[in-house]
Length: 225
Image (tube, rainbow, N blue to C red; front, side, top):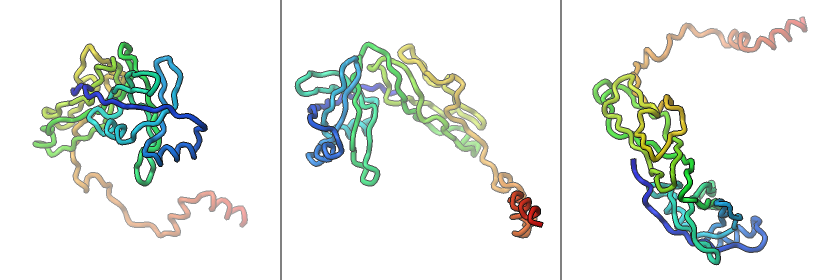
């Protein structure tokens, strides 16, 4: 389990004027992106931020769960995190982000990636397939205790073996919010293609197939007769 200990710094500038598409376009022409800051019982503030800094945070080890120092010019600093963002669909450029002020002494809910570590013995020695069902789990903890990801060792997982949320590393610093018996990963048997596909009988004439698949059309035809 890796700790969320990488702190970035973001400087934001308050926006003024009418917040429409033209305004957002002018902001992006300046090499910035529009954003909104809210939370911690304070009023929302429309700001601009550097997309390079935001992209660096999103692609860091802790990703959008990164807690950083947010300084808004003229209003002071606070802890914050990225809670929503929009990309341009073709080129992938950031268009807008939402930032939330964080109270470091209050527990919060976040989704954390689950990483499988090792090669399952059921795969290595039994020819099975390892499937990961849950790639993220929701937890509740203090902001300073948010892990960047949760590591799960699957080395001893045999054929038909499974890992549930109850098998993930639990600590007194965080609480798993999903059902304890929820499936995270399992090793299944690799079936032969012949066994997986049922035998197929002689093909029926196309006309007969259409007749069976469209009983409403048959009924309409009978009425006409």
